[in-house]
Length: 245
Image 1 (cartoon, rainbow, N blue to C red):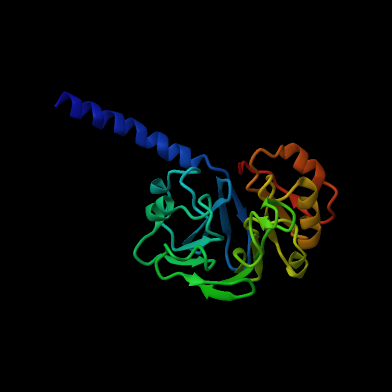
Image 2: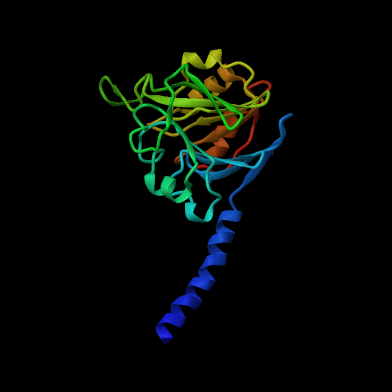
């Protein structure tokens, strides 16, 4: 009995601490004509968005948060199949009976009735238009001729909240297709080696996309003060640094 009471007391002490840890994740609010979008920066490539009472989880990874303590997902977006983007432990913790899924083809096998989008395809779910756009390496290779992220396999996503566009790039380098992304208001661009972009590539990607607000993410060991210094002279782009290792 004493052991049981001790365990209950420890759990009672831990639960508020876990909840506090989640509440301390940084948040930004993006105003749109269709209602505010709240962005919660969970870490790495994991994001949670809230809009019109809906919860959107992007690339949930249990290394970044206790997903059992987070709001359940109305929609989960998965950019590609790598374990830090497709983590079924996190997805199982956050899904509910009517959760919708959007993924690339290669990431779709473990998900329940996902909407599979190839590069260039779109779907509208929960009132949000979702455009799948290319995400790939053109320089960094796992071995000669084998890029870490081959062209045509993974997705980035452009989410339309009314007229406001939020671009989540996925694992990519500065690729020419970025120049076709028009009217991006908020962009998440990755900057960590060897898997995504160098600082110089990040600057070139920012110039191609021209978002109003840029969040470097999937940052790994990148020194973010250096990233901010590189980006400060990109005209018309406000860089916001948040903890996204």
